[in-house]
Image 1 (cartoon, rainbow, N blue to C red):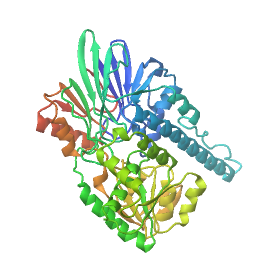
Image 2: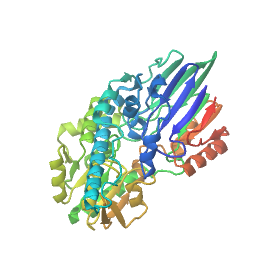
Image 3: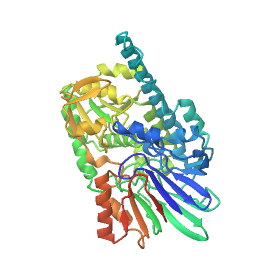
Image 4: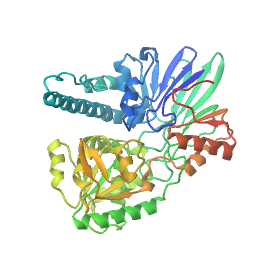
Length: 476
């Protein structure tokens, strides 16, 4: 049996693991690299194998850094099934075409810039501009990929290939997120592998807590926040209330970059819950400017049976329309509606993407970063190389759509809303194993974080642990 770490090895994005056992070859996740100039090259060079040889794909959850290369895999010849929870399948039907649309639009924008550059060149050098940009995959290719999705219920065993059994357990990260338990037979020997996917922080709204796992021979565990602790939710709520109080009365907008799936719904939940508890006494207007976030919110409402009790209670309160104010939530759809928000004052605008590198959020940042009365609320991890990371690191000027933008808006960083388990929660989840796995691989963390967390697991639990290098292969 052999495993190869094709992504998320000493970095946070691009989750993709190739497992070869007997005659079977499967992928666990097929995610896009995000952040920085290298991401584009990595995405072009990823999948450096023959996709026609892959039997199936198991997807832990819908976030693009775990699923975003699935359409490219299919476009390059993969013809097998893609297994995920029902909620994840529903989310992918929204997210993958949206990802493709963004890539098509960015390629079109780059080609327009090249065309203008050609026109500006002298007659002598005209025609030397680079080749036309081509999207990583198209909307049509994303739609083709969706035909391969196969929904699977939580806690139900199935056989993705004849020599393997699999079970998806709730990872508590976003709606539909899963831990993978995989039993593989190789030359008469059976091994159990566990892929944590992205683990959620316990006691968070909307999703349930991560499922404890008792045993594994081989374990892959994420480490996004393996080197730090989150603020508690109460402190984060206090900071959010402060951000609202310091921004909206001055006529500023509070801009919230948020992933369309998971983070947007959590922000809406917390704002509504604060109003239910009368911790926000003034009327607030919330605009969700992301068609994908609108669809994801609708999908969340369809899958309430896999959410926690608190979410269902809040939904019941919201429908009562009595006993206090409700937040005024408006979902935009068209580009024209989004553009009209440029003239809005004194509102909360939630928009994707969560790391500020694509989508409508860039337009809102372009219009609000220069305004001292506005605020930017960062609610989650910002990968190295992203616009969000540059803002968190204190940049006073940033480039957006080729324009030099001054950063005058106040920046708020709310650490307690992360959908990822922090160091203590990761160690607590690992502590649920009855015995040490024979091998533990720490993945999905920046290089220093993954290596530090691997050392910590070895020190605290005494487990043989390592953080594999990119493209490293191991015989198990």
